[in-house]
Image (cartoon, rainbow, N blue to C red):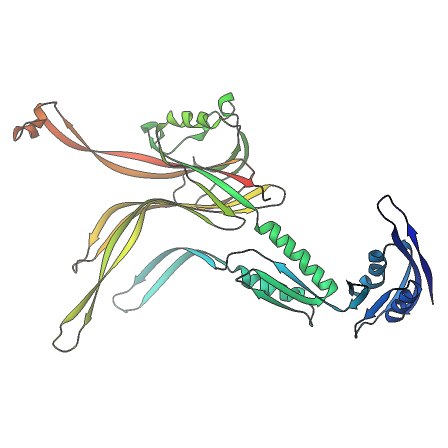
Length: 432
């Protein structure tokens, strides 16, 4: 049963708007469209395959709302071609996703192995502990997999990674779901954060050889009006009980109060003050140090009479600080950061009988997650190293006399503990 009512006009100050009224109960959709077209003198063409039954009753709707009332519940859509209205089953839309065509990956791996054996039996048992962290970012592969899960069995899509273009063809309802999904992905993907890093090395005085005592720093003074937001201890290698990863919020100009407080516990030296920009869930790397080169040789047996062939390879080891930060920026302004600092120091070089060299490194490493607000500061401490320094003392003038100057001068070794303190402040950049 159906009733088609003639259309009317609603006048506004701009121009008149045509409205439509229609009522149908349990009517095949194709018949309802035919009746609606005749009653309102419209040119409506229906593609093959349109089916379903509708029950509608609306009054005074504009054309867009009227057709939506007839078609949306069945999952169909319409488009206007001049004076012609075409009702379609499948819809094709093209989306743009601006992202670099590459794959980012990283891996951190620590390995410890303990072996034991008996000389009589000749057997050997090994115990091995491996701690590894892997991060592979395959953006386009993930998008293609997720699009495939959103489409119907008759839906299809094409992705052009070079231009960042995605073409989707499917039922109208499924295409709208894909559009909503891609908008949310874009909004999250394009969030950007600037991370300000301040890295200091503190030569600790004897009273503070165990590390900076943060309890002796008054964070409530006007010069350093901090608010403790979150504390996450990081028990991995290099951290001591007096150290922690903490988050603070502070006002502009208050940071100098912390530096002055640290100077009371040791000599503070600036190592680096970089600023880096990174997108949401993308790792950023800060490296401050020196690459030390070492040589390895490989001996292979040559052909008859040619002798052995020795091949040398150069390998580099970083001596210094490597800091990896991966931020996750939420919609409500919170920032979660995976912070992984590692500091290495070259202590010695060993040489094999064949002339190959290998480093002996002092390594301090940690890692943890922290969640802060935009503009809050993260403090990472506890990366302590012991250093031996050679100091030469001599009597002025007399120590410089050749031959006898050695009687008036001397060299002694002094042990000194240094702690690396890292301040990180993320700021969300507004995307226009």
